[in-house]
Length: 195
Image (tube, rainbow, N blue to C red; front, side, top):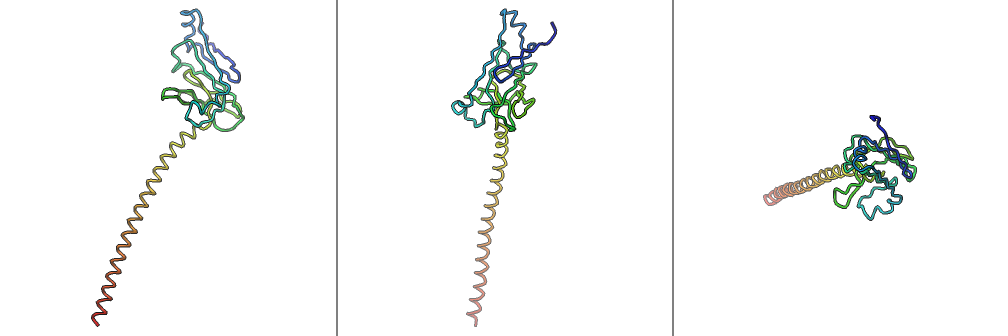
Protein backbone atom coordinates (compact mmCIF):
# COMPACT_ATOMS: atom_id res chain seq x y z
CA UNK A 1 0.00 0.00 0.00
CA UNK A 2 1.27 3.43 -0.90
CA UNK A 3 -0.96 5.16 1.63
CA UNK A 4 0.82 7.00 4.39
CA UNK A 5 -0.41 6.14 7.84
CA UNK A 6 0.30 7.87 11.08
CA UNK A 7 0.58 6.31 14.48
CA UNK A 8 -0.93 8.55 17.14
CA UNK A 9 -0.56 7.61 20.74
CA UNK A 10 -1.80 9.55 23.74
CA UNK A 11 0.79 9.43 26.54
CA UNK A 12 -0.87 11.00 29.58
CA UNK A 13 -1.06 14.63 28.55
CA UNK A 14 1.09 14.37 25.43
CA UNK A 15 0.11 13.34 21.94
CA UNK A 16 2.84 11.85 19.76
CA UNK A 17 2.43 11.48 15.99
CA UNK A 18 4.97 9.23 14.28
CA UNK A 19 5.00 9.04 10.52
CA UNK A 20 5.23 5.32 9.70
CA UNK A 21 6.83 5.59 6.26
CA UNK A 22 9.78 7.63 7.58
CA UNK A 23 10.63 5.15 10.34
CA UNK A 24 11.03 2.02 8.21
CA UNK A 25 8.37 0.02 10.06
CA UNK A 26 7.65 -2.24 7.09
CA UNK A 27 11.31 -3.24 6.74
CA UNK A 28 11.68 -3.90 10.47
CA UNK A 29 8.42 -5.83 10.61
CA UNK A 30 9.54 -8.04 7.70
CA UNK A 31 12.94 -8.74 9.29
CA UNK A 32 11.86 -9.22 12.89
CA UNK A 33 8.24 -10.15 12.44
CA UNK A 34 7.27 -7.17 14.60
CA UNK A 35 8.10 -3.52 15.22
CA UNK A 36 7.71 -1.57 18.42
CA UNK A 37 7.42 1.99 19.63
CA UNK A 38 8.41 3.01 23.15
CA UNK A 39 6.80 6.06 24.73
CA UNK A 40 7.88 6.97 28.26
CA UNK A 41 6.45 9.89 30.20
CA UNK A 42 8.35 11.42 33.13
CA UNK A 43 5.83 13.06 35.41
CA UNK A 44 8.05 14.74 38.05
CA UNK A 45 11.28 15.31 36.13
CA UNK A 46 11.15 19.03 36.95
CA UNK A 47 11.85 18.24 40.63
CA UNK A 48 15.15 16.53 39.71
CA UNK A 49 16.48 19.22 37.38
CA UNK A 50 19.17 20.52 39.76
CA UNK A 51 20.52 16.99 40.26
CA UNK A 52 21.35 16.28 36.64
CA UNK A 53 21.69 19.64 34.92
CA UNK A 54 23.60 22.84 35.53
CA UNK A 55 21.06 24.73 33.44
CA UNK A 56 18.64 27.10 35.09
CA UNK A 57 15.74 26.72 32.68
CA UNK A 58 12.40 25.72 34.07
CA UNK A 59 10.45 22.78 32.63
CA UNK A 60 6.99 23.82 31.45
CA UNK A 61 5.78 20.28 30.74
CA UNK A 62 6.39 16.68 31.60
CA UNK A 63 9.16 15.07 29.57
CA UNK A 64 8.48 12.24 27.14
CA UNK A 65 10.90 9.77 25.54
CA UNK A 66 10.04 8.51 22.06
CA UNK A 67 11.94 5.54 20.63
CA UNK A 68 11.38 2.94 17.91
CA UNK A 69 13.03 -0.34 17.00
CA UNK A 70 14.83 1.38 14.10
CA UNK A 71 18.39 2.34 14.95
CA UNK A 72 18.38 5.43 12.68
CA UNK A 73 16.27 7.98 14.52
CA UNK A 74 17.97 11.19 13.36
CA UNK A 75 17.18 13.42 10.37
CA UNK A 76 13.80 11.77 9.84
CA UNK A 77 12.15 12.43 6.46
CA UNK A 78 8.89 13.23 8.27
CA UNK A 79 9.00 15.09 11.58
CA UNK A 80 7.69 13.74 14.86
CA UNK A 81 4.94 15.97 16.24
CA UNK A 82 4.45 16.15 20.00
CA UNK A 83 1.66 18.01 21.77
CA UNK A 84 2.56 19.03 25.32
CA UNK A 85 0.18 20.14 28.02
CA UNK A 86 1.75 22.98 30.07
CA UNK A 87 2.19 22.19 33.76
CA UNK A 88 0.68 25.62 34.49
CA UNK A 89 -1.31 27.88 32.18
CA UNK A 90 1.07 30.55 30.98
CA UNK A 91 1.50 32.97 28.11
CA UNK A 92 5.29 32.82 28.51
CA UNK A 93 7.21 31.69 25.43
CA UNK A 94 8.04 28.01 25.56
CA UNK A 95 10.83 26.29 23.67
CA UNK A 96 10.70 22.73 22.32
CA UNK A 97 13.83 20.89 23.47
CA UNK A 98 15.34 17.43 23.69
CA UNK A 99 17.89 15.93 26.09
CA UNK A 100 21.34 15.92 24.46
CA UNK A 101 24.27 14.17 26.10
CA UNK A 102 26.77 15.08 23.37
CA UNK A 103 28.57 17.65 25.57
CA UNK A 104 29.38 15.84 28.79
CA UNK A 105 26.69 15.25 31.39
CA UNK A 106 23.89 16.43 29.13
CA UNK A 107 21.73 19.45 28.59
CA UNK A 108 18.49 20.52 26.97
CA UNK A 109 18.93 21.55 23.33
CA UNK A 110 16.53 22.94 20.76
CA UNK A 111 18.45 21.71 17.68
CA UNK A 112 16.11 20.00 15.23
CA UNK A 113 12.93 20.98 17.12
CA UNK A 114 10.53 23.81 16.42
CA UNK A 115 7.36 25.05 18.03
CA UNK A 116 4.54 24.69 15.49
CA UNK A 117 1.72 26.09 17.60
CA UNK A 118 1.41 27.34 21.15
CA UNK A 119 -1.24 28.80 23.42
CA UNK A 120 -1.52 29.27 27.18
CA UNK A 121 -2.21 25.55 27.86
CA UNK A 122 -0.60 23.52 25.02
CA UNK A 123 2.39 23.60 22.68
CA UNK A 124 2.88 21.48 19.55
CA UNK A 125 6.52 20.63 18.80
CA UNK A 126 7.87 19.23 15.55
CA UNK A 127 11.26 17.45 15.69
CA UNK A 128 13.34 15.71 13.02
CA UNK A 129 14.71 13.05 15.40
CA UNK A 130 13.68 10.89 18.36
CA UNK A 131 14.86 11.47 21.89
CA UNK A 132 13.53 12.69 25.24
CA UNK A 133 11.49 15.84 24.70
CA UNK A 134 10.06 18.59 26.91
CA UNK A 135 9.13 22.27 26.95
CA UNK A 136 11.39 24.80 28.60
CA UNK A 137 10.82 28.33 29.75
CA UNK A 138 13.87 30.58 29.61
CA UNK A 139 16.06 29.04 26.90
CA UNK A 140 15.58 32.15 24.74
CA UNK A 141 16.70 34.25 27.66
CA UNK A 142 19.91 32.23 27.80
CA UNK A 143 20.64 32.95 24.15
CA UNK A 144 19.85 36.63 24.64
CA UNK A 145 22.07 36.76 27.70
CA UNK A 146 24.94 35.53 25.50
CA UNK A 147 24.33 38.46 23.17
CA UNK A 148 23.97 40.79 26.15
CA UNK A 149 27.26 39.49 27.47
CA UNK A 150 29.03 40.61 24.29
CA UNK A 151 27.36 44.02 24.47
CA UNK A 152 28.29 44.27 28.15
CA UNK A 153 31.98 43.52 27.49
CA UNK A 154 32.11 46.02 24.62
CA UNK A 155 30.51 48.65 26.88
CA UNK A 156 32.93 47.92 29.71
CA UNK A 157 35.90 48.14 27.32
CA UNK A 158 34.76 51.50 25.93
CA UNK A 159 34.11 52.85 29.44
CA UNK A 160 37.54 51.66 30.60
CA UNK A 161 39.18 53.34 27.60
CA UNK A 162 37.47 56.62 28.52
CA UNK A 163 38.57 56.29 32.16
CA UNK A 164 42.19 55.79 31.07
CA UNK A 165 41.90 58.71 28.64
CA UNK A 166 40.46 60.97 31.35
CA UNK A 167 43.30 60.01 33.74
CA UNK A 168 45.88 60.83 31.07
CA UNK A 169 44.16 64.15 30.35
CA UNK A 170 43.99 64.95 34.08
CA UNK A 171 47.71 64.26 34.56
CA UNK A 172 48.59 66.26 31.47
CA UNK A 173 46.47 69.23 32.60
CA UNK A 174 47.98 69.08 36.08
CA UNK A 175 51.51 69.00 34.65
CA UNK A 176 50.73 71.81 32.23
CA UNK A 177 49.23 73.86 35.07
CA UNK A 178 52.35 73.42 37.24
CA UNK A 179 54.65 74.47 34.43
CA UNK A 180 52.51 77.48 33.72
CA UNK A 181 52.32 78.47 37.40
CA UNK A 182 56.04 77.87 37.75
CA UNK A 183 56.77 80.15 34.81
CA UNK A 184 54.47 82.84 36.20
CA UNK A 185 56.20 82.69 39.62
CA UNK A 186 59.57 82.96 37.96
CA UNK A 187 58.42 86.13 36.25
CA UNK A 188 57.17 87.53 39.58
CA UNK A 189 60.46 86.68 41.30
CA UNK A 190 62.46 88.34 38.54
CA UNK A 191 60.32 91.46 38.79
CA UNK A 192 60.73 91.60 42.59
CA UNK A 193 64.51 91.23 42.45
CA UNK A 194 64.91 93.68 39.61
CA UNK A 195 63.38 96.55 41.60
